[in-house]
Amino acid sequence: MNHFLFALLFFLPAGFANAAPPIANKIPLLNRWKTPIDFGNTVRGKRALGKNKTWRGLVFGTLIGGVSAWLLFPHIGGDTGTDIEHFLIGSSIGFGALLGDAIESFFKRQRGIASGNAWLGFDQLDYVVGAILFSLPFIRFSLAEYAVVVVTFLGLHFVVSYFGYLLGFKDKPI
Image (cartoon, rainbow, N blue to C red):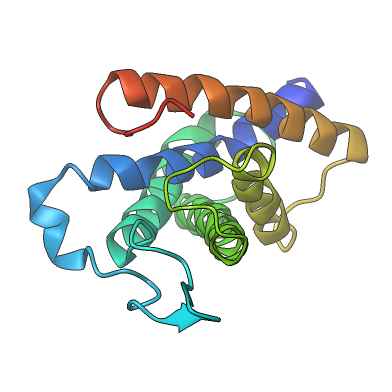
């Protein structure tokens, strides 16, 4: 398999993890987990992360990252490990994607950007950077492969966000 395609497929669970929280928001059974990660705490008078960053989204997204890797990795070639390793790697990069998104949300709040409003460039790259950092204990790609991943996921973010809006999972198209 082409190295660039392998890198894109390897990071696909991060994209699934990043897309999962708005879906989890629509599952009534998960409402007990809708507590904000920041527990309503503020920094310099502003919410640390905001009401949209919840434990429900973090746990659900991390699990979706793990399950998607468990399903995908056996089919992409390479020595990606055992089923449990696939799940753990996917969970790790999924968690990294969501942590990257949460860190970016902290800076958005501090800059006065309301929860749910776009911060172009940062909103599209935060989860990719987080996933890449959390993948480093497991695999290394070339700079060119990372560049292809970043550019591809940047574009995919706009497309997936727009479809999420059309399907009613998101309040805004971007």
